[in-house]
Image 1: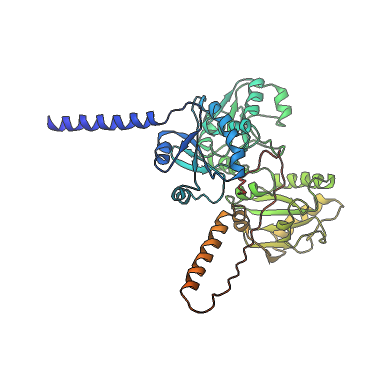
Image 2 (image 1 turned 30 degrees about the horizontal axis):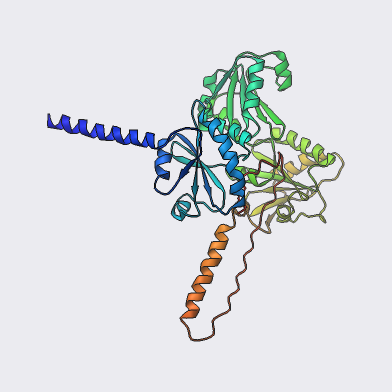
Length: 430
């Protein structure tokens, strides 16, 4: 009897604790202002919470704030609500350290308590569309051409989209769960021949992959066994041909394949667009490699790490390991304007046959470039601390204080914008 009484009391206490936590934070459509006493509790209280780590003096933070205020009530009304909160990370430095905040503003989305960095758009309506991905069904069921169109409109351009035609949802349910944070998944139960023409498939079952940002698509006809399907989905999280910018570099970090990198003068030129189409054809036949491109005009510093600049004969093709080494293919170091498709084939043939020259990048590796994208606030802190330590040391000596010279160089990646200026992925400039 005594044991039953103790258990009952404990359950009551637990119930009061849960109730008080739930009542402390309410989804009322407003941005929650948190501090070091309740941030962890808020993260535990909500399944989905987007936290803005800001600083009061930060200009970008001030411009972001009204966008979050506008998005908050819309996200609060979702079937699975997403709460927006903010915390002064410049004041609560312990939390800034705990959550690895290195620039302002930093947005982190906590899903059942697990944080992921938010790299999406920061304009209210686009932010809402982006975040809806995380509370959407694992696999959406589409029963008409109109439903397909509505689904694509709602999905937006920020994630790859996998749509199965003539497939049962159970076929893609496992990868849909595995890659829920990285892609949209759906199956179309009913569709017309017009849809088949629009998405360029001529039989079913078929899995169509759309990268709407880059206007690229691929079609997979099977086999739909776990290994084949899983490999195909993983390889197509990136578009068939990847434009190199700050965001895609972060995606490439998670891909173990070698990168066939084509460096051209200006990616927007007509001749460059024709070359990109040829690279897409090569990519469709070489799934074990990632095909990517970058323009010297768009990102000169990145191109220069592979000894490619305005004085180099371009386009130039290399095979990069994503870190500090890359290979030139002997006899195919650059492309001329004659039959570039055949030249690409000879380049790939030479690479696979080992007719290569190994080189090392001049500057940062892939991780180095990614690290260069972070905010510079941490650099300022280091400089300040070193200066303080040197000052303290000098005060302890009778001799003339030493002259201290500290030089810090921060390389800022200049991404080629494939979308509007409102979408600046991972931007932390203060």
